[in-house]
Length: 308
Image (cartoon, rainbow, N blue to C red; front, side, top):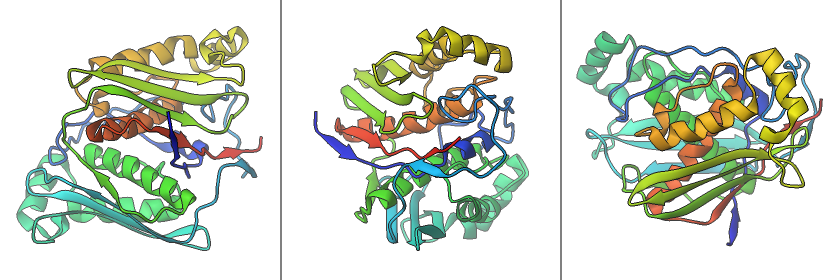
């Protein structure tokens, strides 16, 4: 199968700051009840030790190329669709422009009635959370921004789309990314692979879609020989002792949850495996976007790896 290199610009350690929670399947039905999860003891997708406080040197993963990168949803939901762009200068994100627009190009931020209703229901409105998410991306230089309480679904969408734009920026691909949001999933097998190992492992992930539904989910961490982290007894024992959960437990749990869930946002974070849960959800969103378009080209992620 032909591979298209969609490159990842997310610093893996930043993902541990996310506080993901269950969310509505509709972007306009935000919930104010964010379920907090314990911070995973694993500092990266394949590290069973505690997080390093010092800034580490990057040892793998492409730099962002200067330019403007754009993403647009194709379909409106309750009168709005997402438009999103980032500007990169000197290898840094200098501007983030995430928004929801109606058919006339008006922003949800400027819809007073919508803002008042959401503020009363969830405690936050688009005029607050949209600028907050944009500012967070520029500040963090990573898709791993914190979820805004009361705007969980919008935060999840932002993280997924920001990651795809960062991948495009690493590749220098300025072609607008089109998301066929809400489309039926096309039957087939959809694959994603990380390019670089971190502490001896990298993510491989595939989903099988049958009759328009996710029939199987195969998320895993494998080493150069193709052996799964689930089968690494030493690693499992170490993480179980430190975090209370191990790969042989949380990897099957995440895969089973995705098959049972109505949407990726319904997959709950596994306590003690927060970072891995966040990576799972973000990559699952990309695979769903591929399935909505019927694009079975393997997604290759040039994941950032930092020196220990």
